[in-house]
Amino acid sequence: METADWDNVSEAQQQAVRGTWNHSSSTNFVLTSLFNESRLHLFLFSMVVVIYTLAMAGNAAMVLLIWADARLHTPMYFLLSQLSFLDIFFSSVTVPKMIAGFLFGWISISFGGCGAQMFFFMLLGAAECILLALMAYDRYAAICNPLRYPVLMSRQTCLLLVAASWLGGSLNASIQTALTLQFPYCGSRKIAHFFCEVPSLLRLACADTAAYERVLFVTGVVVLLLPIAFITTSYALILAAVLRMRSAEGRKKALATCSSHLAVVNLFYGPLVYTYMLPASYHSPGQDDVVSVFYTVLTPMLNPVIYSLRNKEVTGAMKKVIGKCGVGQPFLPLLVVYSEDHIVLPEASGASSVGVSSVAEDIKTKINYQTVPFDSCFPHQDQTRNY
Image 1 (cartoon, helix red, strand yellow):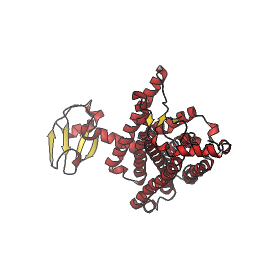
Image 2 (cartoon, rainbow, N blue to C red):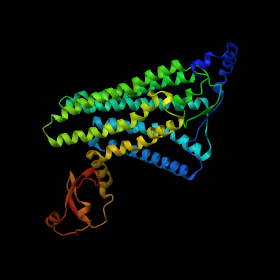
Image 3 (cartoon, rainbow, N blue to C red):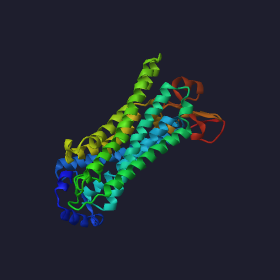
Image 4 (cartoon, rainbow, N blue to C red):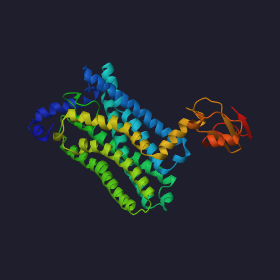
């Protein structure tokens, strides 16, 4: 309720309204479904389910890949694994409830459930905002201070940065959730949104929310605009350092890594700034739904795609995992020569077209070899076998 409308209500009416406030927590809210039964909406719903599934699979694969490959045990990939971890839960806070609401009609949500959904959404969203800023600092330290990078981004520092992102997200979520739920909701219980988000819930409050909206704006400045300013400054310094590089290959690698990060930043921060920084009069509930789908479903799906397609180390690790121990190679007799430390296997491309020769030297001229850590496939031995 706007300030002017509330001021025009008589004291008796205000007391009558306040009398119903203490019952507001016992009534469920009703969420608005994004879709109806039309064919177009069924198609859009199917697309959202597919994108959500891909987001879960892609981010889970990214976390497991970084954990499994020792070459990716670096600060940059540690932070990237944390980003994927956040994205998994960030989408799962809202999308499963939306899917269940459309399929089974479960559009009702309790007061406590609404508060829990709002809390975890704000926690994970703010933590990701802070984490993206910390990832920009990591790239700045790696490119602008390469000699001090091991000290600046030590294991302890990385853990402290991740803990700071979670702590900042928790603080933001606690403040905003507590302030939002302390308002009385004595009128309509229908939320014009597919999940409990602060701006949508405030529209139902039958009290003056002007002061809190100013607090919400200040919070948006701290959680959104300050990290954006930090990221912009970091990449301005990075760009200056890259332009001074003499190595063309070094410039290309640095720009490829940073462009991936900037793409993720723009995809995530843009919709959030639109939702939380612009006045409510500048966007409708329908527009809010579309923008919310973008940063709750689409962006988490694109993050692992952007980082994997534009990063040779990630794609190399992925190929290594897929091809490890001959997975995906044709089943052909191969001459396997191995010693105590390494095993030498034919490349799949060569194995598909070259037969087995009884002479090892002849095979070496016909087949490209790759070296695989010995422990990954066989026990330690020193011999030559025909398979």
